[in-house]
Length: 167
Image (cartoon, rainbow, N blue to C red; front, side):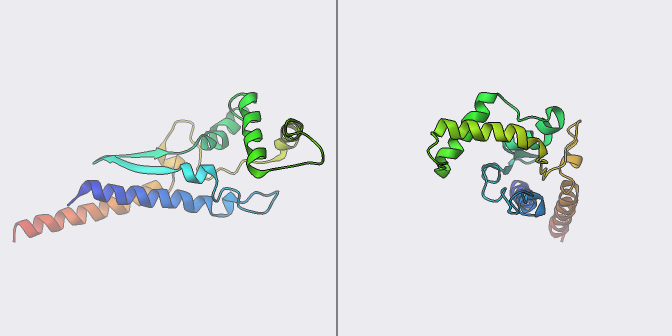
């Protein structure tokens, strides 16, 4: 039995479950009525990989920190104001946003001010639960179920291999 292969399969199932949560109603922005998490940088950055025979590594974007930790602890966008402005500037360029005869800097500043004022009303949309003590079973409540099913399957496979050996 290839334990590494089985762990990779489990990691892929967990990754699919996280992405499924992004595609659920949790990802719907209440202001726009559309799911803004689908196809986002967050979705593209999610990776769950089996590193060796006993370790699965979760790689989740900074957005997770913002939604789950930053908002609960500070109520503000984590990082510096200049990083926030840079993100808005990149977005304005990428989407080719124009407002009348305003310059790009004026648009960015206008959006920045509006987000600071109106952004307080926007509730975070955590797709993963937060745990202050980093208890993975609380952060990913479905992980216990995945692991239990996987462990049962591995045990059955080991028993099958042992029975086969002693035939």
